[in-house]
Length: 313
Image (spheres, rainbow, N blue to C red):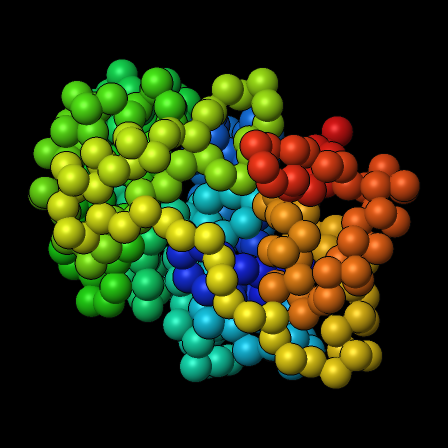
């Protein structure tokens, strides 16, 4: 399915995800990615699925589910790789009053066509995880030919040109890019960008264990907030109440929907309840069925238990 959710987003509320790329097709192989290693490390832009098929899936999801807060271009890869991104955003805007959100690592903003398409999104949410080339390579593991300074230059141009909301995300990883020196280097770049909010994130949803991306401490996040200033906001836990739906709608194809969600993002029982309008018992029953079939597994992280789908082979 090219559309999933709505799912709870710690940043944007209830999000209807539009997934326009095959699994892990991206110009980066970030160590913190919750989907694991990149299968196709690429900077080639092309139309992976027909726009008409994507729009049909979105129409169906909007008709069947709760009204989303945002329609989000994100999921299994970098949406900037979709060649007709601008046309797709235009078509999505015709379907709903919900703003179109583009979550991007910003790498393809160096391409003029992709940069122009990104300006059409109501909300642009690029990321910046490094203040220098060395840290960029260590954290984001870019495809060959990607230059950090060119990416930053493009990010600077696009954020200043964007007519809507810009929400910059910074993913902080313990002992990798969260030292005071690293934070100040990132902040030097942030000062040259235009952004309405700086979302300070850390790997709460677990990446694949062997990737070694550990969450920063509360003390480090507090220091980061001090360095980045009043626009910086640590990302809070999603707290929206479950949507009120009739029983038949809530439970229709629930096993499939939960499985699709877990394939794109590790989730707690509370996450699944909020995004699918399920009771805790209903969500737990679905997870038990999926785990018995080998379609999901539990991944304890501190005082929380996340559930995820096995990685594709």
